[in-house]
Image (cartoon, rainbow, N blue to C red; front, top):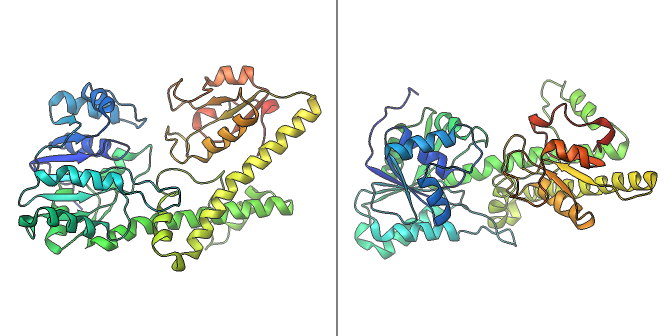
Length: 400
């Protein structure tokens, strides 16, 4: 697709200024569109109004500050009338793993009184299949005069933290509306600021696509994690095993880790499992394997600490290196590293934590890397941040 032409689409309101909403708001305003970013967190809104950004994402702070200064991006706690509304609020799961849609529903309710003919509403929040159609029904029940006169579509984000701005603009998009007119209206909107190809479908398929992508990744990671535990039981080096196995021309096993985190892969499969429990046995098993890998890692760490204590005849001072759910970002959502750290803290209250991608004081026990190395007896790398490479003394390293 040729680079999209920059231009105006009237005012766009983006509801939710988190990891997706804020970069999207910055990208749209940088493309010349007038954007109002909305979030219920008044402290966040005040911070952003000053051009200050707390999300650790390359180039985001600079783009937000520029857009705020130019007036192309404004922020508030309540929405106003607009031509396009983009909903990018969180969709966590509840304690029973069923989707918690309260933020999406609240965002929709906040704009219902503002809607007018020819408005376009786009849901980007990860949602169960059928959400877009359900929300359309809720809107027209409250505003029956808008039946057939507004457009509603679903377009999931598919971005990688640490590269969000680039991927929002360059990645392909799947766009599904409640009817063909809605799909086309959303396609026209995304053409104005994206470069990736746009793929038209219906709302249900677009919703399922997002969930299927992350369930696929979860299943593949689960295989690698299960294989690593199997290799340990057999007394085989897992890294060597995977490297050699991948020499097969049609095999590409992923690298095992300490579990699965983040707001997508660790959450999205549950949306499908909750809706279709009899058709998702593999997805459920993958979730169980990846959760078990975190528990397995905890057991291995405790075994290693016990061995150190028996040898030294004292309790060690421990530092964990990395808390985020993946390398080189400051995103702690659903992080297995945080789960491991909290378990260790229950046994070692003076646990030291090193996470260079979040501010000191934002998590208990945070300490700069150099101080942690000096004070700790045992260093436990949980996340392979690039800034850790070559800085971990071998004599203090607890190898997992």
